[in-house]
Each structure stands twice: as C-alpha cells, then as structure tokens.
Image (cartoon, rainbow, N blue to C red):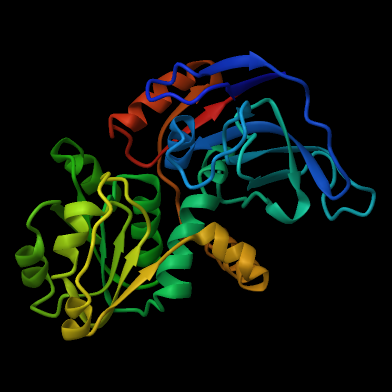
Length: 324
C-alpha cells in the first residue's frame, strides 16, 4: 500500500517520501481501517525533524489522526466492517490502511464529514482538556486564544464559544487576520499578536482574561502573563513560536494566577476514565452541531509536501487533510 514514510530526519523534508509499504497486520484488540481522510498536525511536522518529544524509531509511517471505514475487527468488537470511524495513534495514519487499537476508535459523528472527523480528535481533545478539564471554563468568562488560525487554536475558539465563553483570538500573521475574522466573527474579538495587553484590557473592561490558551510560547507567553485575571489560568499548550519562555515566580504569585501545562494525549493515557469522559463530551457536542472543525484544504496524499510546507510557512488556517 502507499504510505508517507519518514526514513531519516531533516529540516527540509528530504527524509520523507510516498512509498510502497506492507499492509499493517491487525493484532487482537485492533481495528483495521481503510483510510478516507487523515489530518496533518504540527507534531507530524516536528517528528520529521526529530523536534517533537516523541521520537519514533526510523523508519516510520507519519500521521497521527484519521477517519475511514472499518475493514476488519475482532468477533466481539463493538464495530462492524463498513462502519465509519475516526481515531488516531502516534504514527501510521498517512497511509491507505491503518490498524488502530479499538480503544482509540470512535464512531464518526454524523454531523461531520469524514475530513472534518479526521480533523476533530487531536485538536478538540487538546482544547477540551485545556479549557474544560484543566481550566474549568464557565459561561461568561473571558478566554484569550493564541495561535487561533492553527488547528488547536481554532478548535479552542470553537469550543469556548460553544460553552458560552467570551473569546479573544490572536494571530501572529497579519495576512491571516481576515481569514480568522471569517472563521470566528462575530462571536470573537480578533487581535494581532504583539503588545496586545492594552487591547485585551480595553475589550474586557479591565477585567482581563480568566483563561489564556497558549500554543505559541515565547514573546506571546511573556505578554500573556500581563493578561491573566486574578485567580485565572495560563494554559501552556505548546511552543509553536520556537522559544520556550521563562516566568519569574513572583509574577503568578503577585497576580494570583496559575500556569498549567497541557499534554492532552498523556493526560488521557494516565487517566483513562477521564480521557473517555472527554471524548464522550466532545462527541456529544459534535452530534448537537455545536462544534465544526475548520478545514483549510483537502489534498490527495500524493501532494503531501504541499501540506507540510504550507504548515511550515504558517499559511494554514485550521487543518490540512490528506486523502489517500
């Protein structure tokens, strides 16, 4: 079968190619899925460079998120051949077929297309874990979302609005602010990243933000420490900006806020009952039509480089989806 194979680590994708690889062998407890759509996530790009915390042994098939049709299951499986499902694992999804642990598979929400289902789990799982599970979001609270044109950022905006929060969304790309307005307005205020504290204070009437969702880090994190309300939480989701920021402990002490690290996948693995509850709550919201993953573009897997390079250049608004 065709699959996107990472044979060596590189900063220019020279170690990545579309290759013929053996079909995956389904093990007991797994579901074999014919891939209809697989979404690109920032960790997929980082893993080609060896810059992600997970470093799979080489070679490996890339891709951590997928939607498609069940082909083969255990006799006692809750799934049947022909079922449309979505799910994921650390690698292996950018291929024509993938074998997934049954616990990592869910029925695809009828309200979502398969490309949307493929773009749903990781981004919204991160957003839900951060905002709800760790952030304790409440209706009416102010939520500041950075990197809001990215997959996890737009998911956080979508989820926060669905839960009745008031959203301020930022982007580091002036050229993408118009696209962000299209995706988020009129239900969110849109700001450019930079020195945004005064604008946040003006929008919130001086109250600042109960939750700050930061997948960017660096200068954005530094400025965010000035935007958290007393008793609020600064949610550290990632470091897409490149620099890992420091914070002097007197700042959260004096301002009375918490800095909370968010590793959604690890959280679900360490606390499987909470992980299941998070997935069930997300599915319920999707089934009600309250969550809508934003797809930037759908590409055949043969054009994988176009998607990866667009992500590397920070051109993507929402998610890139590949179809094998």
